[in-house]
Image (cartoon, rainbow, N blue to C red; front, side, top):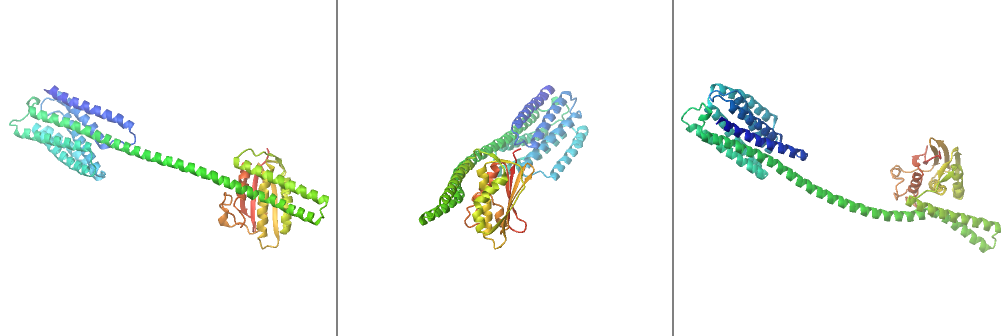
Length: 479
């Protein structure tokens, strides 16, 4: 008889242990959503209670005063019931510290109380005591599960509620059997078969309630995975939309780049073509007057050839800039390059009564594309000329400096004009950002920065001492 009852407890402990191990491995594969700590703790403690109780049945001498391990086993059953109740409570609202401390105190009270009943009570009193506690816990648990299901329908919680109701029914049955029993039970063999059946039945249903708890967690995992899958699909759709948008922007950018190239060519060709136009007008006038000398014709034709060559070089330079091709560098002495640009701008400088101050102390060579750096200097000097032309100052000065610095050469182009407004300085080098000059297209400074960056250098703007604008260019030296 004792062996058979103990076997029932060991079988139920084995089933619950298998459930625990299965849930543990499933938990490891589902790292994002963890099982509730209360029902997992309840399952672990309940397994220990079944094992201790089963072992106690094998060595029990009598039911009047059983061994201390029965106090341990029943205390573990109580703790397992408390954890399961806390789980149901956590479904409705967070567990407060006061609530936790209250149940911890109840455990502390339960252990000496049951130990007192073990020593001074009898089998009927102890069983009645445990059945009354079960009825209170089961009723409370059913109420909380009903509240949870009313706000969040769940098939697994419905199973748990039904299982708890069956446990409640079995606990009532056990009380009924004890009340109808006409003699005192002192030996295991004297326990009524119906009472044993109800007790084992209650433990079996308790095992099913743990299965329902595991099913509820798996249900939550499935819902979370479904939600995650739905969100992933939405993210994929958004990413696809983003890729389409980027593709459209790239196409639009190509269109803008093409327009920028056309505008840049017009902007850069304006200077040599303007010079050619003036020379052609001069040539026509002299031919009409019949006073064109051989020397003048040769000078004008040389200028036209030079301007034509400049225009061709500008087109090649701009095309290489937008294609990011090779820059065709050569060793250049910056002083000579600056003087060549000043020769081109000399007529404009003289017409505006601008004084040019040169301070060219650089001695190292730089490896650059002559035409491209020439275009940068030409743009900056022309900008300075236009700024000085608009300045009310009578002493108009353009200062050009070059000096050696660490790893390269620095050039400074400074004018004492009105300078650049503060609100414009932050986007001064942006493409098509606009210009403070009425005729500007917002391309010159962007091209200057693009060219200098292609050569591994940098360009920056700063207010000139006193008043005016100053552009600083750094180019790395050959070594």
